[in-house]
Length: 74
Image 1 (cartoon, rainbow, N blue to C red):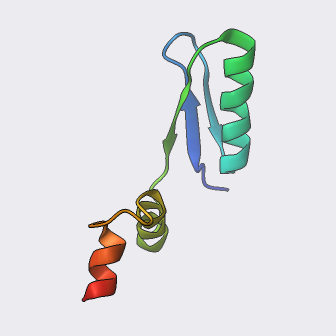
Image 2 (image 1 turned 90 degrees about the horizontal axis):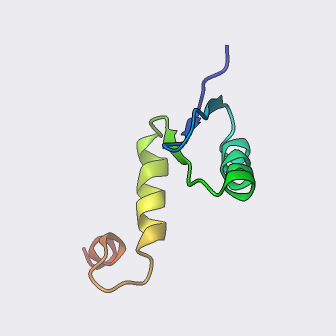
């Protein structure tokens, strides 16, 4: 059995679909937006701590005072 990595839901309609791959979930979101004008969201399964840290670092890359700058200066 494969793990579901993301669930896409839409607050405006009955859309609810689970995906093994994030790319497929993202494609579903974009397709639903195009076809309906709704704004679906996704709920991601827990990620490993390394992946979460990398995502957090990417979101603040180059901003003075970010977590990256604090780690680099220690």
